[in-house]
Length: 85
Image (cartoon, rainbow, N blue to C red):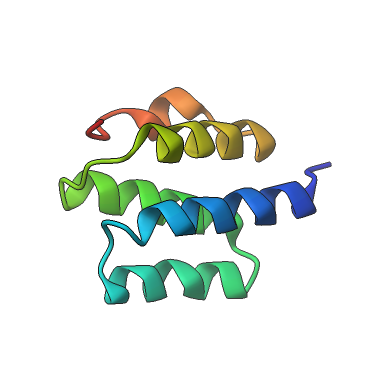
């Protein structure tokens, strides 16, 4: 069973990293998923924004994405594919 407290903590840390490069609209889009407990969709949306908008992810953001993927039993390699470092 996933450790939701850890996932919520990691998502909050990722949001802090993302706010350095994401627009307010992008941040609100992700926050809507977090607010209703759709953590997987929130993570996928963050990754999609980095990829589709060609935003550069910090090493800290990449490490958090990888940790979140493992915590949510998702494939970190497919999530991180295409993200600019």
